[in-house]
Length: 158
Image (cartoon, rainbow, N blue to C red; front, side):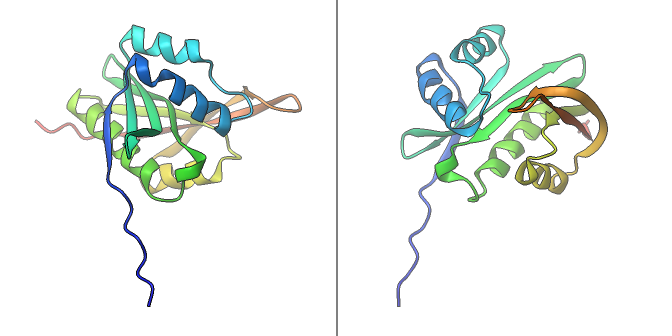
């Protein structure tokens, strides 16, 4: 009988400038129209909550969260294609939700491509619901693709 190997442990930590090349590489391998290295650098400089998922001393995912005026916005959440379907995206999303609650955020928002079924499934599982659409929001191979705007109310512990 073959015993399946256990997944190596993963940790989530703050992103730093040394992570940017690995983050940019994952972004390029994940999307046809990726964020640039400079966009990630600017998010760090702006003080957004920038997180990395670390697996065996390597970046396996990342997320960017903006928090202001009692609201939060997930700007980016991505897991390396090599490590998808292992629950890592959910781990990162749970950390974002924890951080948003800790910052007394009342509601959290994000945009997602309607064609990204895996992401939509995860967000629905975590209680996000569609509140709007942003026409022609994303660049696409032929024209533009709409974005689904999702939101989740957060309960602030007092």
